[in-house]
Image (spheres, rainbow, N blue to C red):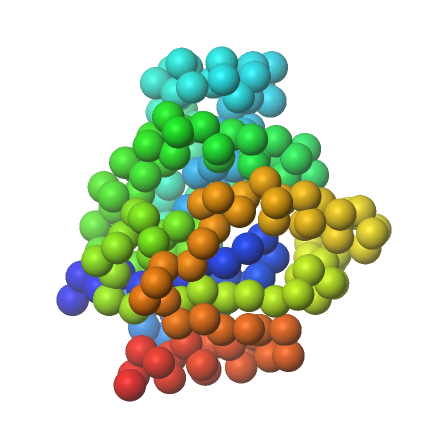
Length: 205
Ligand code: DC
């Protein structure tokens, strides 16, 4: 099978954890598309370049995403930079980078070259990048619940994390509308296992 399953949603909606577990249960790789936008944001920080300047320098780096069953690794010119992609600095820079049309075209081209099957998470995987996907899901949760979930992953206080989530919801909203044929799942009152069971239930149906 070369099925593609898309799991989209706003930041900290749990889509990466869900995508990983669903992929594991199905025995296929999972892909986190946000990591590629984060890698371009890291390029801006490394080069001290503006988001507009980085558009002209995308070809300077060799960007690779290598999926393993448990995680994704991102390489810039052969160097594994995965550990640097979830800092607050990258969080702050990434939305502006992801709004650049050339950056979106570049990331989408990298993604479309990956052979199926896989489970992929992002914002516009079901609506734009893989409209032909077999199953599409869109996860939502209140900003407060998402901030609570994210605090342990960031070395920052709840209020800082919540305001960063609200800022990114606003900045990312253009590319974050659910695909018309996506299954919408509000995860505010579900734990991770409950969301995974709901997703697998729809796939089995
Ligand atoms: O899912 P994430 O938080 O790792 O995504 C990082 C940023 O990349 C997020 O601010 C929005 C952007 N993004 C996007 O615009 N389109 C995607 N398909 C995935 C992520």
